[in-house]
Amino acid sequence: MDFSKSLTIAASGLKAQSGRMRIIAENIANADSSPQSATMEPYRRKIPTFTSHLDRDTGASLVETGRVRRDQSAFRSKYDPGNPAADEKGAVRMPNVNALIENMDMREAQRSYEANLNMVTATRRMISRTLEILK
Picture (cartoon, rainbow, N blue to C red):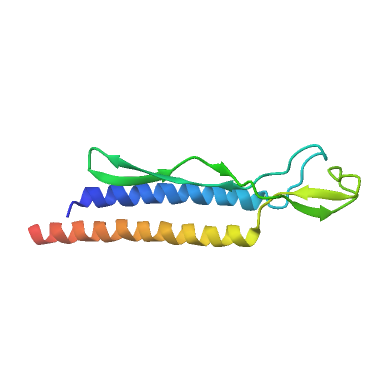
């Protein structure tokens, strides 16, 4: 087994999941934000994507955060006639972010991050044991 290859693969997974968590955190932070005026569009949920590419040095298939897409689903509406962004009926268009979905996505990203971190730990342990045997 090539230890450097497994470390490279796990590191790419860590970096990709870290980027995914950053985007999810941005969505959560903007979930309740409202636009400045009725003519402005509210925050639109961002969706991270992943791409895979072949690393020529190691021959490993690595993952990285790809293009960030915008969720085209409808905005939520909230009745708040005192808000400067309210329309003539008192409705304010709110971001299309569902906090429950974002929290579940965050949990999934954290678990994937932990799995990659466990791969790094296991590989380091194998390297250490190999060096002990060679002594």
